[in-house]
Length: 396
Image: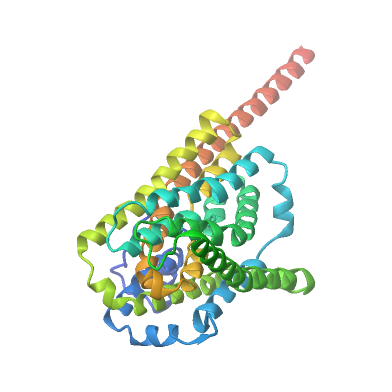
């Protein structure tokens, strides 16, 4: 997902201009805000006309929803195709930052899910959704993009992305099942060994689905990149187009989920939706505060590593979240669209908040670089003046 621009939309010129000139002005803004605009569009479409999304999202092959699974495969195949091995190797030297990031993303923040499911959000699917969002790994693309734009350690950010999303496939199903089953009045829950066996079976089933829909296509995309000579050049040349395809597949999954839950969503009060929006924003602010404390005054990481770890450990991935949601049993947990709402709110809020932070960091780095360049220039000029004075003294 491409982080949104913090600047206002371009103002159309009053002077007559052709379509090409207008497109040139609007294109950068539209590309930066593609994901947010896409969410707004499909939310409106799903609420106004849910039939197409509902019909597309209903057919299944066994336990796999066909259209959603195709979209998921597209997302993670593209992720594998664009994954650079050399960037991952460059991050292995930052042991403390890497270790802290992995533990926070895969172990510590998912534990927040146990507290979130106890909060009496209405409907209950909102608490499931926000707890689920806390359990998933860090973002797939937007985090790395933000870290790079903020003059942080992009290689470390990429390493955290790959490591936590691969390992997360194996940890999230079991943590999430424990979190959801700890909620008050868990639907169809059973006590004792029978309940434990049900939880283990559900977690194993989700693990299998995530391996098939995430690990396999990502490995296939990475294999194509390594084995097909033209693949790296293709991925580089069509980087923007591949990013748009990735985001479009994610938007399509959200569209189908909301379309299927349209009746329940429109029945919710504005207050309930407003509360979950605030909760999604609050979760991200809390993660930023905790991770700032750990990376700055406690661990005192080098600045580039600190920026990478702070952003990556505070973000959560929407693609994995909606993948997990698409495999949840609606008869037990409720409509996928309602569960997805807190995840979408959390994702959009972290994009805007972190884009603002990254912009501040980038401006500070640019100012520091300019000051350093001035110092180097002054030193060089001073050296030249001293050399010139020395030559004049020798002549005298």
